[in-house]
Every structure is written in structure tokens, then in C-alpha cells.
Image (cartoon, rainbow, N blue to C red; front, side, top):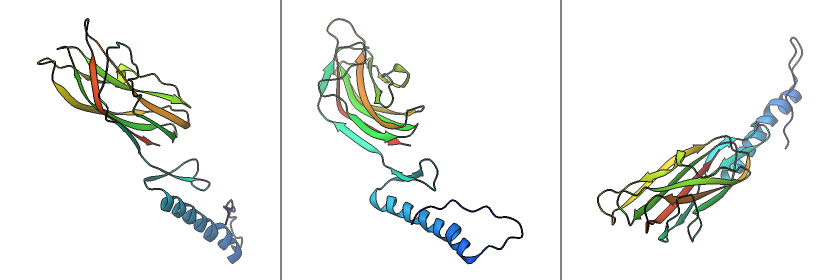
Length: 188
């Protein structure tokens, strides 16, 4: 069954059973069948992409976790030895991204940061504007599990890759350690 562009009604014209069946019943059945097939094959939030009559998509959150403990002494955003976590997902113009990690450093008062960069259809560098920032003042052995959520807007629709990146600040010998890193991307 295919979608039929609905007819335009004209005052005082007869609306036949065949017209009713083609333009109303069959189009409603098409929409229901399309939605049911998408929902039955994918879990998640169902939303319309484009116009409902032509396309329905299920958009499911995607998660990636890296448990490995790794360090950096970079003062600019960089990858760790194990890149990521990283998620590639088809998005529209918006994606909600949650990212978290357990962080520590070897120098009191030195900021520890992590952020998210976007590549693929869209190119956005990791930024302090949506970074997680932690500063331990009491002991260099302190660690914290921290995270945040950022809504990326203005994305170019298509396959976008979201990657956590890391940096910090400190004096000679400084380094920050990250473990239990996780990113969750909800495309829209």
C-alpha cells in the first residue's frame, strides 16, 4: 500500500465510497502500518522525520563506555590512549549528549576538564563552553564521578560522531586521570 495525496474537497460535490476509501481509509492504514513496522523493529522514541506521511523513524539512544584508566597532561583537548568513548549515529539537527567520567589528578587545585567533539556530517571542536570542570583542593588523591548533559543544535543531518576529549591545567609534572568514561547520545 502506498500513500495517496489526499483530494481537495469542493463544496456540494459528492464524496464517493471509493474516494473515501482511497483518500482517508487507505492513507490512515498506510500511516498505521508504517508506524507499527518501525516501532516493532526498533525500540525508543518515535518521532517524525520530514512529514509523517512519508517517513517515520525510531530514534534510540546509543551508549559507549570505556572503563580503562588513562591519563593526560595536555592543556588542549586531546584523545587518551583509548579514544573516546565514541558514538556514531544518524541525527537530525539536534542531539542530546550525556557524558561522564571518574576523574582525579596528581596536583591539588589543578583543573580537570572533559568535553565532547562532533565530526562526520558536522564539525564541532570540544569546548570549555560545555565541558565538565573539576578542581580538587584538598588532596591529590581525591577522585570524583562527574557528568553533564549538553544539547547540540544546528547539526547537519546525517551520520555524526560524538567523541569525548580531555584536557587540564597544572604546573610541571601535572597529569589528570580519567576512568569509567561514558557517553550517551540521543539523536533527534
